[in-house]
Image (cartoon, rainbow, N blue to C red; front, side, top):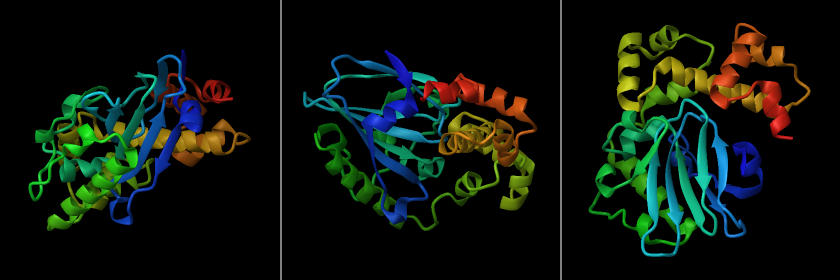
Length: 258
């Protein structure tokens, strides 16, 4: 059975707000309990501009821990039944703080996460992610570990990526690059190297997210008003971009989520 991500989240996913020190690099910690599911579920996950660490808690031997890259298209994901799933949804700015690898090879896929992919600090082992059967214990550890990593760095979390995330998504890459103070070519090259997607694609994903949030928060708002608010040329431009990242037009998305 396949259902939309947003409908599934409304009934299954619980989120936890990260520590204030981490809110520029962590969007949320989340859990899904599938013990009441009788079968596996297939859901469609839409691009959200983040990457995730996902822990499948089976209470059998070691947990399965995976790393997802940034997705630029809707992806079908199988949610196994009879387990807890815990995850950390991370902004791109967290990449350089936490990971020793680039995410360019993980676009639209997930890979097993190993300890050598995580930046080490004070000989602290990351083994708890593979052994704990308690989501809150996992989140407490991740929060503490990320706080230690931030405090051990001489610079603030990646301000360029943070600026992009909070920028006006209708602006061009060239305009944003000028505001940040680097060339658009350097920004595009670096972003593609780190995450495997173009800076423009990432901005388009952020704009899609904004349009989707407006659509869901006020179902009486017109499509053309959303298009103008989010910086699309017209209604057709919004519909084409929305379909690219969700597989549906705005109207189809609303009907699916009823």
